[in-house]
Length: 120
Image 1 (cartoon, rainbow, N blue to C red):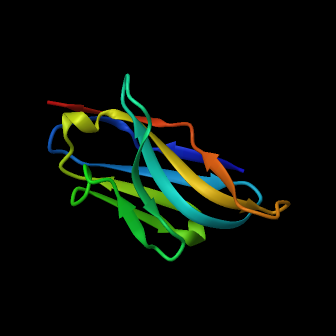
Image 2: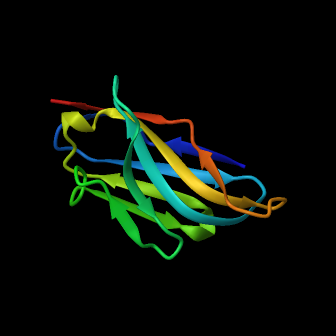
């Protein structure tokens, strides 16, 4: 099982980006999915999570600007980022709780990270 994140890049302040994260491999079920970010010199922090029944949770710093969504049929989650600010610059990591085909319980998986740079 692996997670593949994509969609990062350079954008001006006030702009938008959409990140995607696709899970692949022998997957039986995917539970909560989420996005985290880590800015240079800082600890990794939660950005947003979404449960299988699409209940969402957001960090206060992104509420009203970011939207997390998922497509269970495609084993993919998305992060729609609007009104981006320079302080949103970070490496964004996707995360998911996945039961693999040969596993008996949820395990925690991480994507490789995708860089988002917001210029002022």
